[in-house]
Length: 321
Image (cartoon, rainbow, N blue to C red):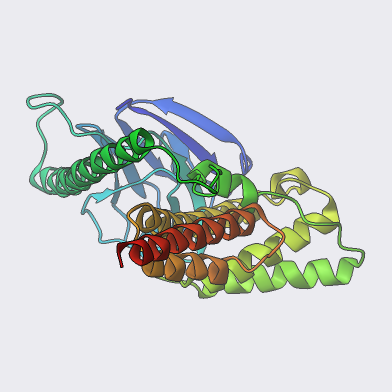
């Protein structure tokens, strides 16, 4: 993984601007000699550091004022492994957001010698990577099984009276994200737009841990209503850069929840576990209740596919008897 990190500031004169840095240690704080000098009274002179060790970015808090990652406080002087899109702050104040490549398993013997806390943090990240690879291996096995089944069905030829459709075609995660970013119709009343923005900000402050998808949807919808009034694609366009960071964070969390539920339902559909698949698809519709959307169209197509396949199964049973 590259040691290049992209940082978007949320406070100070550079608020909303992006900074790209290529170094393994980045100090931040109020003192001007820091790599990231942050002008905020809640920030200590040497508040903390971002450190890249063996392919993993970590945040280390050195201040008694504390540091937060996505609103959750981390321990002092203990490395905390970061993920792309994490938002760093102090108290309820957002300082900056980070973006970088997803970590890969580091090569043995690479990088500098680590301290014990750093080595522990990297070991935890390696364990997560190994677990992810295990699931990828299991997924690859079932993909191979599915390919064999599909090839066998193709060689057997389609049944009379049936036609091939795209009703089983899956959406991608990027399509779901694009759907969430579709603008709403412009709101005619400024007062309503301001109320939507206030509700979204209040809802964001209330979320913690692993928030429910329906709560994230309401917050995201209120943010989009506010954007619709201003006729903007981003809160950065109307000089609300800190709001944009929170809006992006909510959008990312909502997209991940929808994608996990949807992809699980689609996998079950392909494995002919139709009742479980329908429950997952209904769950996705509950997460994102806007009926005039791409994901609702795709789920209705999947329901048609399930209905056809279940009908085929019933006909086969009749022929046996």
